[in-house]
Image 1: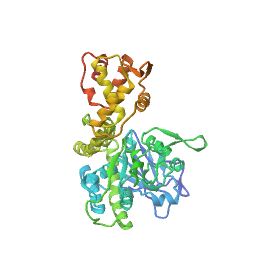
Image 2: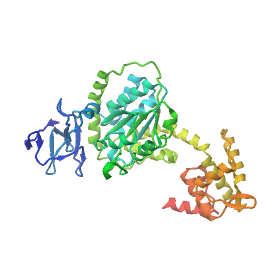
Image 3: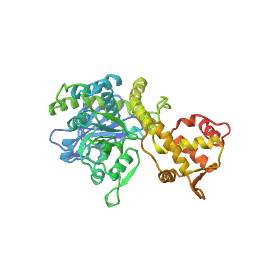
Length: 441
């Protein structure tokens, strides 16, 4: 790796230079932001040609000269950038070293430390994924939660630690820099929740000021002492509950953070340079995970393209989280409604079912699974409306007609909820046959 300042300058700017915050080219070359000279609010650029890296205020590729943008001084101080690249050995050794940071400095348990390492590595490849991984950090000890964010700030790509983010402030952030947002958030409003969820998907733009569109895509980790606030974001993100397994063994001082970042940021940059072009669909069998966790597991597996065994090990860290999702789904009233209607439809003994009768069946099923809440017929009726299962009036009250349209809806809902009953095929049911035909294509 060598520094390569250009002679094509006018003052301190390149002639006809194109501003760049990073590029991945079709020939495998990559441009990355790296820290610049001390005292300047302008990063340098690194050009990787697949074998070596050149660093300078300007880099040239494919006949074009590129330069980094000027950044606000406050942003330069808050966002870490690597200054160079360093060999990282293997993906497994890098993963283990990052996990050890969380164990050594914060005394976190093994599984939680490995999950945090998984998220950290994933932040170096978000532009190679269709979905950026998110992280929900649960815990009652605020100081520990903040320290987790600080340590993540040493190993995540382009980290930015923020507090009390609002939707307007989110839209104003320079997300085109490839930021990893590390949020200490006391409240997650519905509008912020929608933005955070939507910004996990690449290509989803949000309206900005002056008729402009903004792209807020990128990885995010959120710590909030109130579990109820994080529950809204829990679907589709990695869950980490942070409690110390033993007394803290090493203080996370400013100097310690700088030393960690100076050691790991160059290694992780090299990991990105070597693996950005290798990300492809993982061959892992994820069918044993619920639908809610399957996409999360698939995205996580893609972040370890050079080590399929490490990808498998990282995915298995989500097993406990998926088991919890299964337990919640087991007691979910919507799932219970669909499960009961599935059973009644396949019995083929009646043409309709009264809503109040369905409510009794649903409450009995949920009670057998440990649920203490009871649902009235009116509440079940509203649930049926949200599930798009039509109800009709009769002399005996509201009822569901068990016709073919209802059967199709129930089968579709059962598949979307990933209910166990979908594994039992009824040879005499045309909708079961239709679903089987779709799967076999």
